[in-house]
Image (tube, rainbow, N blue to C red; front, top):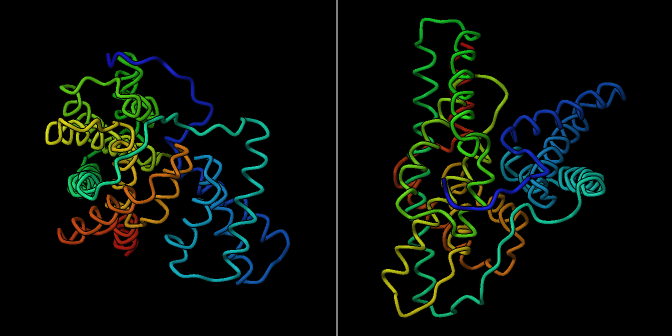
Length: 319
């Protein structure tokens, strides 16, 4: 459908938050077994969550930063040591089994250094930030709609699972976490006229799938949508600057980080995560431009970060 070569992925990240929860659960079990104090249990729990993320995304630094930026919300020496130690040991074990190659293959020429060209990445962040707001609100709307359905949670999961099975039967590439779509966007093998249709389908289908209340996550689908947004922005940039050869891959990578920053509002985690997944450490300035712009747009729209919104929703549900 997208005229791209099929690729086998050794890691499955469509259930990333589940890997975070699994890592935290293992750490909690160890802490209980050792009868550790409250402070040590808290540090070990956060470290286990970061190790789960690091292993799922093959991104050790992002796992440690995620603990500090999203879970803890502040710098603590105890947390830093625990998170780094857990992430490093988890990645060493994981790479010993699966290898150390980046999850996505990205190649591109040297980027233009002109300030005017960097503004294209600001544009990418602005556009992707708006889409991130729509992504958050679509997820929350799907959850509210699912709660109003006059069926049990088991029936809901069965119906949504049946729909997902139908999608897999029609085209397996449309389901899952979206890794294949992300790689196809980086490689620029998706026809431009399919981008809006693919984005809308992934947005709606992802929200419906998340509303099933079964183990599943947001990270990988979020990055796939950001990749599509970045791909679209690369076409726009080429139209605006036809005299300059602009590589597609940097726009896609910036789109991934911008979607994360706009949705989760954890820009440092998003930047490091995307750099580790694609091996694109030379894109620091474009990634900063895009992530900053996405956060400005999301904040101006009054949007609540997705995980904070989900926490608030769960707190209201427990009352």
